Amino acid sequence: MDNKILNKSITVREIIFFAFLLLCLLPFISPPVALLMGIVVTQSIGHPFLHLNHKATHILLQFSVVGLGFGMNVQSALQAGKSGFMFTVLSILITLVLGYLLGRLLKIERKSAFLITVGTAICGGSAIAAISPVIKAEEKQISVALGTIFILNSVALFIFPLVGQSLQLSQQQFGVWSAIAIQDTSSVVGAASKYGAEALQIATTVKLTRALWIIPIALLSSVLFRNKGTQIKIPYFIGLFVLAIVLNTYFPFVKIIGSQIVQLSKIGLTLTLFLIGSGLSKEVFTTVGFKPILHGLILWVMISIPALLAVIYLLG
Image (tube, rainbow, N blue to C red; front, side):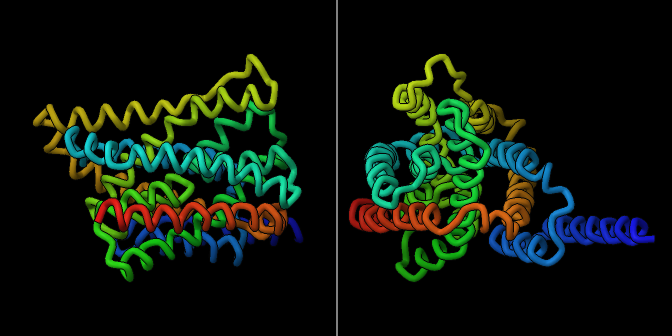
């Protein structure tokens, strides 16, 4: 009898979860709302497919980002990349140094602190996933870093558009700022899409250009942690994103379906953020702990405020 009740409750949870997932397909559900829905669902009924969540989120995000390339052209993408290049270089170097010093100050386990720092400096979860095998991080260390990044990104998705609007940032200013100061690609794209089409294009291009730094940082990591010969995961989806931009720019027949692909990609992004929110269970908050969150938060603030001032005065 107990097994029957348990099976029934699991079935009900699955139905409720899928109902909210389908709700994210509706046009009035924005990425921040989807993220909040995911958090509420997992805190209320749990996540019936938690073991599949990370992989599904990873794949869906990559497909969504590549699809956004079909709404861009080469000239504007190059201009966006150029405007954000110097900000990218300086912010990555500063973040790595500050992250190291903060980790030592707060006495956080070395590999966890390094993964949080790299995730903040480059592209959140993607950077952590790429660097983890290079430094031979354990599952607990990876979980702490990912949990820290995703918790802070959930906050950023709501705060950044409000700050941008209150300061009357231009589309270019907000796009560059969000790409530098928000850790994970999903939240960067989500916040920028809420702010405007131009901000979305700039933020996506700058963030993916930033993601290429995974390769030199991975090589540096192998030296710092003395792990030679480890395989580096190259973010190949960035190449597909560039290919999508080229196709949309130089092949007229692609433009015919480009807008539909972009629309599907935005829906995919909304689903991605719902899954990210549903992955923030009570266990995640317990696993992360106070010090890693404090480390990520201080590092985030120390990067966000100078970056905001820089885009205001240099891109004004």
